[in-house]
Length: 250
Ligand code: NAD
Ligand code: ZN
Image 1: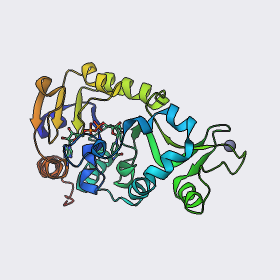
Image 2 (image 1 turned 180 degrees about the vertical axis):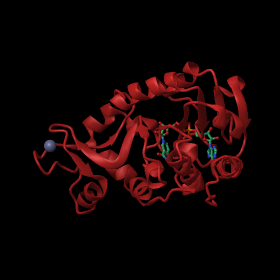
Image 3 (image 1 turned 45 degrees about the horizontal axis):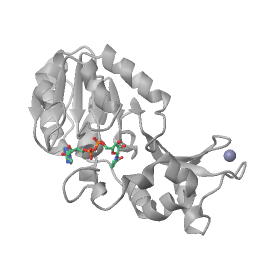
Image 4 (image 1 turned 180 degrees about the horizontal axis):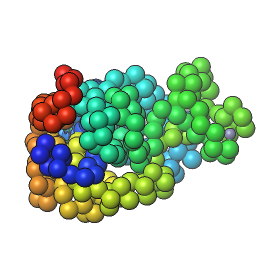
């Protein structure tokens, strides 16, 4: 994997919920621990939000707070460092936790939005999620916009909603890339699951099976944090020989 990445002109990463399970945020589909074991996807549709907007905050207050408090894990930090060194060009993520940016990445496409903020459904003002949850905690549920008093929706893509412009940019990035590294995603959610088909060179790091295992050049069946620290060791030792840059240890 290290060789392929270093030989590539424009490596791009695509991550999913498995990237953040080592930061304590459960994914959707892992047996026993996945969120769908205890939550109902029907409560996360745009129809359900518009018919009863307080419900999502009632059901998910603790989960939202946990996401805001979560810390990047080794895997996020390795990707941040690889991007800072220009080795990884872009990170496309389905995650809503903004942990890539907290781990040092600066070119990230959040194709399912981010829970770091809420958005007013009327004037589109963005409001820090910490502030939104504080209002909910103080009894304002559903939370309302400080400008126009309309509903605040978490700025994430609910089932049935259009994806943001970031998805179209992500599609172009995959077309431009010559290597797609997929980490911690079952690739069962559309339309993101169609992105790997645009790439001829797929590398996978994932604990369980994915829908594109058979087309991958390299498949690493390990936890993301562990696999990425190993990848870092490989890449940094080669880079040290090539550029003389000092190593960072994870
Ligand atoms: P998913 O739950 O469908 O799949 C997660 C995959 O990651 C599984 O294949 C699992 O085997 C693997 N995995 C779990 N822990 C791992 C680890 N430590 N290392 C490597 N692999 C690991 O998740 P998905 O494909 O991202 O799609 C589901 C949707 O979930 C996305 O739309 C995303 O928006 C949403 N989601 C996001 C978060 C988050 O922001 N952290 C959390 C839960 C769900
Ligand atoms: Zn407003």
